[in-house]
Length: 414
Image 1: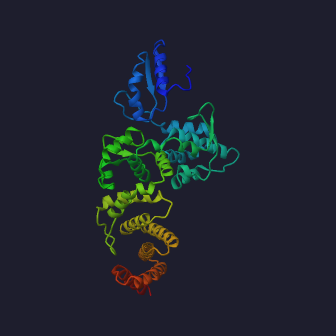
Image 2: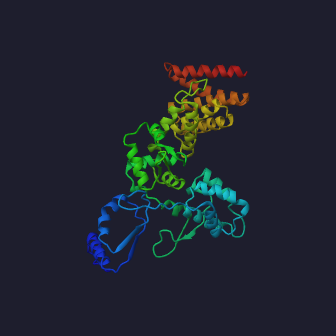
Image 3: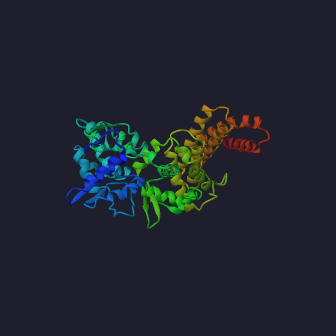
């Protein structure tokens, strides 16, 4: 059919449906990527005008009352490995276990597995320039859209007339469009993006988001649109690693959208100073909150004081429960974050005090690990920061209290 350039879209659609209704039966109309609920609801009645057609939609929408739905899952592990080998002939059987972890890291997404295989094939045709072990490490530490090595690949995914030649991360990033979501939905998706890619119960989400008004409806809307998965039996919700990475990359308001989550985790993992006893959760709950907090910390590369404080809470939890290596790691990360903030804003009293306290917590952790030399070094650095704070703010009792604590710790090391 041909249309005049001036013909409005509504008229074109009406003429198209009228012409289609004249075709002989049986006919099958396939509409690909019909992912907008409002658009589908608006045009469903129009599509029903074509009584001579069966209509099949491919869509991320998981629930539409006027149509039967059939969910297409990712490939089973054996078939996913077969696909991977097809596009990366250099794959070795001895590395099947690595592939299994890679498949898990990308949530079993079939397209992503294919793109990664093609990229590896380009890199490693004559020699191994980018191993599966390196790919897995990048996926786990840097994320799907920040791999150290990436090659242009050819794909017909969303191609228009000719094959696409692009890097995998560019193709993957274009899979989801955040602009299709309402601001509240984007904010909620951001929370899922920084939490582990696992089922999280509705009651837990209520706790993490301080019983946010309308949370249930926003969760169900995101699930209907295919951005998160809904397990009605639990009930719980899960976000795939691919959607997580795209959301983290594309949402410039990510940290702001996660403020409530971070504040809640900081509060839930609060502890009794000097003792470490968790105050606002059972130890069973704290174990879950600490794991969630670790995922949150890994999601942000820019220094933020709230993230630094969250590192302190995680460090305290692990110090109290006997995992000194992890405790030291998170106290060191807290110190690095506050150091970066203080160096960038040397007149900020909060950042200066935060750095002083981070050295104190780090010193206490080293002392627990029986490294007195390191402990004393941290206490001295803490004192150097607290002393001028006490002089500048003599009425602020907390500064003086912490300075006395640090000085006592220094004397204990001598």
